[in-house]
Image (cartoon, rainbow, N blue to C red; front, side, top):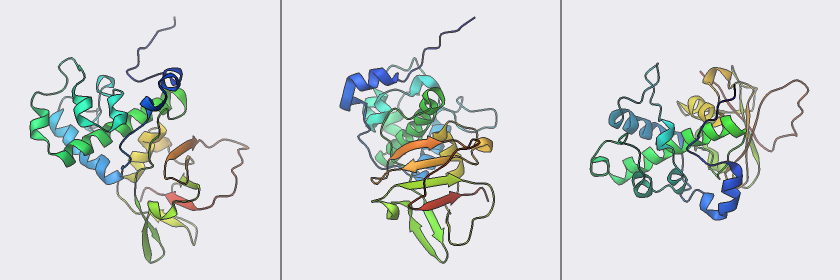
Length: 219
C-alpha cells in the first residue's frame, strides 16, 4: 500500500513557481558555523536527539524561512510547541545565525535524499585544506569549478586534504547519506562557491577532469 508523506519543504515545481523566493539570502556557511549551531540546538532542543545523541531537527522546524537565513522569520512560524519559549532572548546574533546554518544543512540533505538534488542555492560549507605545508581555505578555489571527492584513506601526492574536523559528517548530511556511505561521493562546486551537484559512485561512471581535486578523509 502506498503511503503519502507530507514533507515540510517544497516540491521542485513549487520552488520554480516562486522564483527568487526560493533562494538563500544568507551566503555564509562553514563547518564551524554548523557545529556551533548543532551545540545551540542540542542545548535548546534536548528531546530532539538521534539514538547516538547527535542533534536531529524534526521535519517540522525545517521550514522555507531557513533558506532566507533569517532567524526572526524562521522563529515566526508555528512549530506546534516544539521551539522552547524565550529562544530569541537567550541567543545572541552569532548563535542565531549558527542555528540557522545548522538547520540549512539538514534541510538541504533531506531535500537531496528525497529528490536527488538540492532545491535551493547553498554555498559549500567553508573548510580549511592542507596542501603540503600550506593551509588554504576552500574559498581560494573560487573562479573555477571544483570537485570535492570523499575518499576513505590517504591522499595521493600533491592532493589537498580537508583539515577541518567534522567536515566528513557535514558533507554526508548535505549528500543525504549516512557518513559510512559517503566514500566515493563527489560534490561539484561552481565558480561562485555554491553547491552545484552531488555525484554518487557507480560502475562505468566517467567524470571529466577536475580543475581542482580536493579530497576529504575520515582520519
